[in-house]
Amino acid sequence: MIPVFAFAGMLTLAVPIAAALALSAVLLIVLRGDMILFASLPQQFIAGIESYGLLALPLFILLGEAMNAGGSGRRLIALAGLLVGPVRGGLAYVSLIANVMLAAILGSTVAQLTVMSRMAVPQMVRAGYPRADAVALTAAGAMLAPVIPPSMLFILYGVIAQVPIGDLFVAGLVPGALMGLAFFGVIYWRARRVPWPGGAAGNAASGEVEAAYLGNNERARVLREALPALLIPLFVVVSILCGFATPTEAGGLAALLALGLGLFVYREITLSDLPGLFIRAALGAAVVLFLVACAQLLAWVLAYAGIPAQLGSWLSASTESPLVFLLLLNLLLLGVGMVMDPIPALLLTVPVLLPLGTGQYGLDPVHLGLVICMNLSLGLLTPPVGAGLFAAASLSGEPAGRIAARLIPFLAAAFAVLIAVSIWPLLTI
Image (cartoon, rainbow, N blue to C red; front, side, top):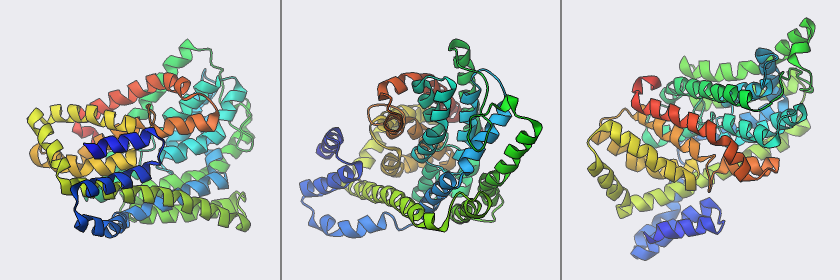
């Protein structure tokens, strides 16, 4: 238990989570006095990221950077404005629809939150939305990123569990759609209680023209400009579902497509912009992969110490019902997600939960993966650690507590969908 308390203490002291993971692994080895384990640390650190599936992560990060710099994301928001029209809370619906579109491109909550905070929040504030409401709506929409394919969590789970990533992507379509519909319901309810302005932005260039007042020529122009951007999520999903490309190949080809659109169609990227774009993507990928390596290191040490087996024994002794096991698992993972980022949480819990769930309870590994990934995505926006929550607060200047209070209805809706997916595995087929 000492490494657990040490890890929690380091998080409290704001030690970077990757460093806390690695130092906890070293501390456990020192306490056991096993120099063989200590000598194997460098090898295990490198082995933690030696996976073809992980190559998809930097490619999708590059795709997100290309979408942001090339103007495709802004045009998707404009298209969403045309779809919504002049309804009360129209920009809230636009923000959510744009998040759904970007979720099929970025696959990362924090990356999606960063993009949408730059594009949607200022526009909503100018239209008359309270800043805290605008930030909360954007943060809630970003919860869709780990559920709607492609998802970084799905990719990591597929690598760890040796489950086809394409199967996970297909399984996430219905839960992602259900979560999106639940969020639409929350927006509808909220718009009836709060005097949000009506209308939805529809100008691709500035985002300031009301879609309701655009002429037919302007509507046609917005649609024409957005169609190339729509090819990106369509290409990713279709190429994977039809077996034309693996998720890694689809991510690389989609990144090339996004760069091509930015360079030659929208002309918002120049050749001189490419080095900076690649550097930002490389830095983002390096942070994620270093975190993965450190988490895999701690998971390896914990497995050697037999701690996962002890936790598995406790869970298996609690119930014989697969449904009760999943409900207990949801409560456990909610607690884990509140204090740990999803990626290290996934890397630490899957080696324990997967053999227990599939072996003793006969659960389908794809269904179990959906439940785990959806659950951990909620932790991105819950205190005290919630990376997405504090990223939203940092980007907007709003207090995290104020944003969290406005996120409660969205978190409740997402949890309801999670319970439904836990009870009815057919929703993941």
